[in-house]
Image (cartoon, rainbow, N blue to C red; front, side, top):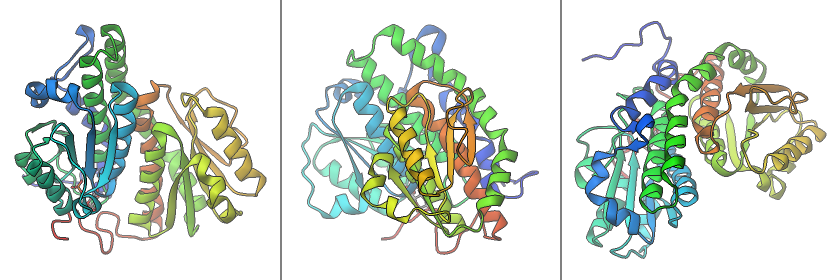
Length: 369
Ligand code: G6P
């Protein structure tokens, strides 16, 4: 059936706005918070092997690679299994070391990305357990993996991925929690409270997206910039990378994402009044005060700061713009923090007259090398 834009100007905007429902779809039949249950049918028969893994390797490309990077942070933090994140293209050609006890997770919206598929096939040759995190049901990666968890995000039409990214990080959170619980790293009560926090997320994300107008006003101010820097740390570092990629892909503005503390090792040299710096600085970040000093460093050099922080946090009011998100569990903050970045990229690209849904030179799915 044909997918319509409805009242939205572009598919991308529609897909950003439907993310709260995407989270609901993703949790349907899986998250039973009141019973403290998390059911991931596609992993059920592999749970013993997953929980016993000595190493997990996550392969992906593009936006999915950013989700994979957050997957590493989540699995290591919650389940305490060492994780490596690989670009499909690098992994497949560098004669990687693989043991049959390793578990490979392939993250791909389309399930057809050539390099991710080839990396998966390599792991299969080494007899690793291979798990897919795909959106496209019945896709090549979904078929070639031993099991997996579908995103259930619905078809994504915009070439620049938005709702699939959100569903990927949410799904990887579920996988991390499932493994953590099986390994005894988190107890029943902790699982229950984390599942409860997940259940509340769609409503919270809706509140973030409802601030579209504020983001639009901000986009008007910065639409002529030729460079942007995005900073975040911990769970929000992959979000900084993804925010920068969104802007690059659809508005053709040069943007870089950096771990906030690395700013002093390079990008600080670029800061002046012409380079806006987006800082994801939630108080839930255990190193929040360090992010605060990064913000001060940018402001002291005349840079403009757009901060993303919680509703009730007023210590960043000296920034040029503050985008507010509700409070949530630290590991879920990326789901809320990425939405304003997607919206900002969208509005800037649209105001610059770019072809938002089909940016130049990019393909929705890269099925050839
Ligand atoms: C292309 C798309 C990106 C996507 C990447 C990986 O570059 O333009 O939006 O993130 O491929 O695609 P996949 O389907 O494997 O997630």
